[in-house]
Every structure is written in structure tokens, then in C-alpha cells.
Image (tube, rainbow, N blue to C red; front, side):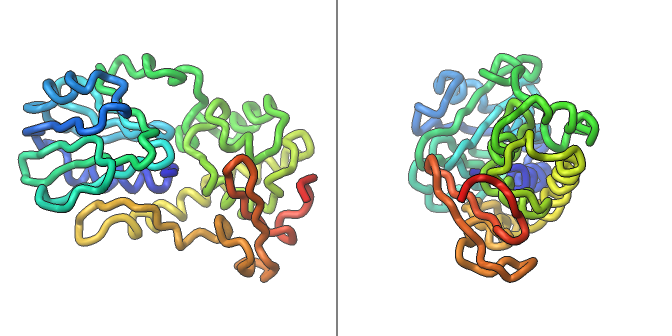
Length: 276
């Protein structure tokens, strides 16, 4: 699942390519991902022009000259391409936008779990759960003190808190493992077991990990000035590295699978927790 580093890498790439480009044609190839009627997207996007791209949580917001926003949440398997029009289409390509430059912006989704909306930029709060979600991790309003205030409302395992969009947006399964490893906190530790100093260290670890990962994610995704996003996360320290040595202490990295989610951590660097 793309998380903040991958999505920020996409934002940085597209903001160097899309502003000022006119959409010349729109093909809505697989309807289930469209939360705005596919016909509206297909019929009204051509002749509109991109003005820029933003990220909010796990949504990418493609702003248009018409005052509308093409909002895409790629969920688990959504992937983007920015390639020549003649390049082979990936399986399950849902949306293809032809651009004035001759390139295509494509959205493919293997499991068709993503969500695509076209709506006025002022109407983003009409997206389900938009208003109820917490602040984005990188939003300046989420100061360390605000993080501490918000996180005290939760009582479950700390990994579940980090990946709960009602608390904070943008962190998923992979980077929660990295953040907890960086902070030296066991993923199964209960929030109520952690001291304020632990929770503040977790805030600083979250920002350090994301700052470190963004340029590495872009390097993995962009080749010869073409975006072709497949999940490449060879740079991560612990996530999905079960059985390998911890890069900090050398102990074997543990890996637990529960509810179809892999959790990776170092028992020596991240002591505690009740999950054995």
C-alpha cells in the first residue's frame, strides 16, 4: 500500500510534469473504482488542465483549472504510470488520461480497491470519512504537543494506533514498523503502557523515518524521468525482513502475521509488548 513516502514521491514527480498540461482524452476502463460516475469523468475531463498536485493522508489531489479536483485514494494495490502513450498497459488499468505532451497518466489497480472522485475543490469533505479523519502526519498543526494530546485518546496496541486514520493520516503497515523500530517501541505495546517520553520519541521517529524515506522512495519509482510505480522498498530496515539481522543490533528480526498483516520488529531493540 502506498504510504506518505511513496505518495510524496508521486506528488514531487507530477508537480514537475503536469501543471499546464491539458487533458485531451479520458478513458474509464474499469468502472468499480469510480465514485463519481465514470461517464462524468470521461466526458468532462477532456479540455481541462492540470494546475498541480497535493497529498492529504493517502489521497492524491490532482487540481484542475476548472476549480475541480481529481481525488484518488490508491488503497492497497493502486499504482500510477506516466509514460508514452504507446507503452504497454498494465493489467487492471482503470483510468487513462491522454495529455497534450503525448504522454499518458494512468491509474491501475490490481484488486480494484481504490477510489476515484471528481468534485469541486471546495467539496472534498463530501468524500466519506474525510471530515472525521485525523490530521495528516506532516500537517504543521500536528505539533509534538498536539500529537501527545491526540494519542492519549487511544488505548490499544500502539501499531494499531499509528495506522488508525482517526488519529493520524498517512501511516500504514510498512512505515509503522519502521517508525516503531526507530523509536525502540514494541508494536504490541499498549498505548497506556507507554510514558509521555515514549510517545514524544515516537513523534520524532515518525518524522525522521518519513523524511529519510521520501527521497529513497522517489529513487525507487522514477526511472529516466518516467514514473512507473511498483512497490520497491528494499531500503526499509525491518518491514518484511523477518529472519534477517537487525541493522542496529544484529539480532534476528521477528515477523508475525495476523489479520493478513505482516508486522516486523526486533525483539532486542524493541523490548516489551505482550505478543509472544
